[in-house]
Image 1: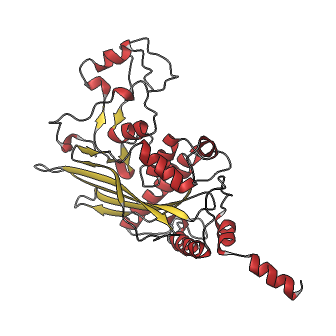
Image 2: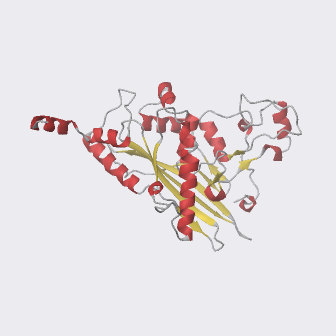
Image 3: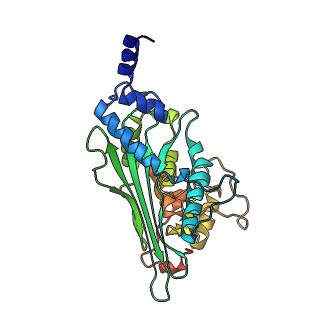
Length: 326
């Protein structure tokens, strides 16, 4: 290759093209979305490389002979959580919710776990970045905390979910976290987990929020399941985190006077699927339970089912948190 050809080839390589090649980014479906400046793409590249360098999925868990690497007890517990969260919860299940040919780009960080004197999980903090599958220099930074204690005289359960929009064309990761939802000893906050927020997050990550984009990526419901999964909540019922860390209130229809009978009369399929099989026996009828988080996700994605649309929040004076199974 002649010297002029080498110079031209080198000139054709930009930070944008480097990122597209390195991270497997797809062309932006909407032509109206800006391609991004070179400065933005360099910031994106450096930030993503740094995140992926700290990705706990890349840590060596086995030696050259295939034997498990010896770890301290706490390190092993963290490794077990990482595997259950990223490999089983996300890769094996939730990531498959994306449309064929479109990948859920995300980078988890090693969770921080705290233990009480009885070696039971007392606190957990999960962080991750979600990147656009398209050539758009943005990311959504995620943070999820959980804290639960059970005692003879005092018990508490607190959990929250936050996000930060990271636009490398602007301030990058210097922005502020926004609370998406939280549970604090039966005080549930989900006002920010709504249809408008879902539309905003999707447009930010994918460039637009059209029906075409949803067909190329995922539905609103699956988008939220992937988002919460990236924060450590991969339970298909949205009731628990890893290590059976209960997320709080779950509405159980058959424990509420007359609710089971009402749902049976309405012929609500017990699996909460509009296309499910209607019940034929009240005695065998077992309508699906619904956690506060699952209800919020279904409502925000316009996906409430024949059972979950009758969800009831915790009563004003509910059972103390010690009655929860965590």
